[in-house]
Length: 245
Image 1 (tube, rainbow, N blue to C red):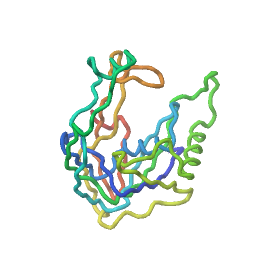
Image 2: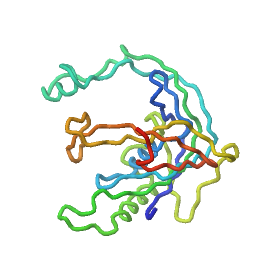
Image 3: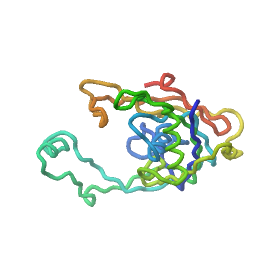
């Protein structure tokens, strides 16, 4: 990759929830590429670019713990006379939920004492400015802005490890600096991590349920999956064309 960043991430807890577990939350063994992208976007993001995660490094032993979390058994409807659309169109109404009436406790299997390394690069989506003039060294400019923000600990919103209850702390690796070696238990033969969520692919659809806030297009979200293989704590993240829907 021509331009890239290396970011070290850590936190007390993390939960990268498996989508097949509908009731109780169960985390993947490691961070997903979409969670890594979310951390990068929390620090720096512009509509003219996107982050591509190349590699995830597991820098701490994989440890699970069991907790019980307060959740609610309902959600605010989108459609219908009391839904978000109707309230926004009418300009009045309530979208709140009385938490005390709908609270319930659910078990969760989450990760603890996590530490990861993220290697990623920038892809520029818009190569000209508003006047149609080609932008020179756009990748390098985005990278420099990210490095300035990350080195100062700045972010748009606090990065988190799968759930907002689990904040992520980060450190930018300087040029010539390397990630620490993986723990001894992660070294050895390749380890299959099963079937994992790669990210969501947004495809343009005239009647899609998702609206692009930047361009106003209607989109349809499709989950993409891959079969990660961890070698000495390192997971190579494939391109979109190598994933499965």
